[in-house]
Image (cartoon, rainbow, N blue to C red):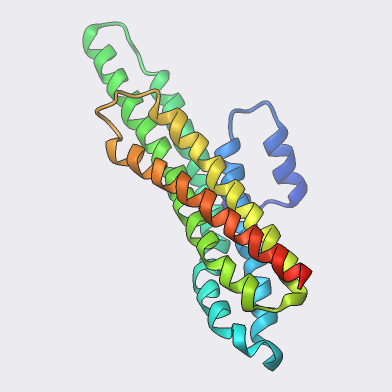
Length: 210
């Protein structure tokens, strides 16, 4: 299901700007992932359609393998992010009139919150994959569209960093013995995102000035 992909831009904007808790930043990050992937696909296609850019065909095909599935997956993650947050809210509404109910409610909140961290973690990982495919595309792809690679990089970076905000805030609200692996992954992804984002921007700027 990808209800956000089925919306018009106006409908999505209005949903995002409403006072409802969802969609929120995690959904926006996932949509940004899809949009960044779409720009990357465009540049790949512009590269592959011309013999002039034959030297960039390898990079374009590699990037296409990464970016093409994200057109739909980003929208799916947008829905999953909103759905996981709604699940946490449902857990908070559970009864708490006795010790057993309190414990069940606490466990549901913790497990729901961990799941609410796992969804944006997937967004961040995929955004990182997209970022990793862009420097070579910027270097050897259709140079007439190199700025589009740059915007794709900015969107992918925003998707990754924005998703990590949601990962972190959810992990911070559960016991430290939960989500240990996710905490380690989060730190690694953030560091790699910074490096790859700089690499994309540096390559794009160099190509623009050459």
